[in-house]
Every structure is written in structure tokens, then in C-alpha cells.
Length: 383
Image (cartoon, rainbow, N blue to C red):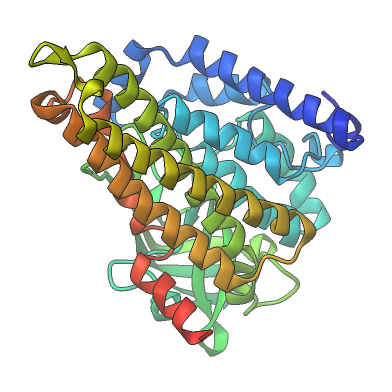
């Protein structure tokens, strides 16, 4: 599937997007059966073979330009993969971070040499990406990070610690936010296998998304080549992060939207099969009203998300609207999935029922990418 095909006329492009989504669905259904999902949850990480298989299927970083091994697709193709991950219960697969959050830093800010060296391997799954921003004492307030890089000849000497880093155990390239001269934030690309002084900490235990490796990272006089700086000069990191925040929040909202759509589908099937007091649960007015509310909220979320994606494709999605989309959809996601779980009764509390996992997996979406309280602050400042 060529980049030209992915950017053809409107009608043809809709058909091509549908074919691409079908490819994602078939790959995930074939290569991520229930037994594989359970194994990944138990081991706390998705197998590297699965990453490489997704790359071979064209599902990793499809928006990378053809010149660097990608297909040059637009953001809708990234969302197609994300939504299929959410729809099929694969939230533990860290492809959204790799493809739609981290890879754009290389596409937009890397030098030509850096792009040619790294991006083809990012697309193939040979290199897995992580974003290392959060620290034990700095989460949503990125100006408070303490990891520091000091220039020493042709290297930066990096000292600091990161935590809650998705893909942290798996990543080969780590996009590191750190302080450089003048306390300005810069982004460095850390090549994990060849960086002395870099260490991975433990794979953190979480209440949900157990298959997504989430780690502490340590830098003790780690030496990173100056050539691995992202951008033409130091101090560009905060602006780089700000430029990509709208897309990050759309990615989180898209996953949340897909997850609540899945919750409704599971609940409809369950309430029509499960009987109580000699009739299906779906026959009770309370059940119908709860599901009607959920369906309405899901439809509103889909419309809000689609409008944001349309604006993002035109390049005019502002930070406030992106914050509103993430806030509304993730808060609604939590309510919808919780209401759906209630209709399962005691079975909804059992781990073997997917609705139980969905509720746990959903909880992070109101926190990462900027907590709901930060979204409200951004919105309030615009009033």
C-alpha cells in the first residue's frame, strides 16, 4: 500500500482507509488471540515478535513519509490502528505511544541523517520508541523536571530519573526530556543498547494495562552524543512538546472512545443473554435507559472526536479544543464503562469478564497526557 494510494481522492481514500483498518483487524485477531493477551499480561510485556509482525503488516507509524520507510499516510491511519487496539482489547500493546506520540518527534524535529538512520527501523518494529518525560517529582508540570544534560565535548552527560514510562522495558530509542544550559528543556534521543550510564529500573505493577511495560529509567553520568539532540539547538524541547500535545490528546481520546464503544457492545450482548426474573436483563426499563444513555454519550463522543480529527488534519486544532475533547471523552468513558459493568452484576467484578479489565484499563486515561484537572485549567484560562 503506497503513500500515493493513501493520499488519493476523497472517495478512493475512504476505501483505502477501510482496507487499512481491515488489515489491522485481521492482523490483531490472528496474532493476538486470548491466550497471547493473557500471557502478555502475566509477563508484563508484549513479545517483540508481535512488534515486528505489526511492522511487517504496515501498522507501525504509517504516517512516516515514504522516503524514510513509511507510507506517508495521514493521521486517520494512526487512529485506525489505535481504535482497533481499543476495540479488540489490546490496550497493553504500546503501538500508540510508539507510532502516534513518539515517532512524530523524529518526523518533525530530527535531522535528515537522524531520520534516515532511525525511522525505517521504527516503521519495521526493529526499533521501539518511548517518551521519557515524567519524573517522580514532575508529572503534568514538565517545567519541574530535574533530569539534566551537561555538554562535555561531543557528548551530553545526563543525570536523572524518569518514571511511569510506557514501553520502558522494550524501548530501543528513548526520547528524553531534560534540562540543558540555562535550565531550558531539550529533547535527546537515547540509544538504549549503546548508552553507558543508562539503566532500566523495574517494570512497574499497575491496576490496569498489565501487558504494557511501564518502567523507571535511570541516568547516572550517562553519555549521549550531542548528535542525538532533537532540533537545531538546545532549549527547543518545551516548544516541541507543545506542538505535539494536541495530537497526543486526540490519541488518548480515540483510545478512550474505542474502549467505551467496546463496553457497550459487550454489555448489549450480555444483557440480551442473561435472564433474571424470567426475562432477559435487557427487558427491564432500567437496563434500557442505562444503555440508551450510554449510546447517546458514545455518539456525542464520536462526533466530538471526529470534529477534532478533521480540524487536526487541516492544522487548526487549538490546545483548548484538544483539552476539551480529551477531558469530555475520558471522563465519559469512565462513567459509561462503570455503568456497563453495573449491569453485569457480580460477574462484572470477576477478572475473567472483559468488562472488568476495561474498567481498570480505562482509569489511566483521565491521568496521562495531562490529568483532567490540567485539562480544566487549560480550558478555564481561555474563558
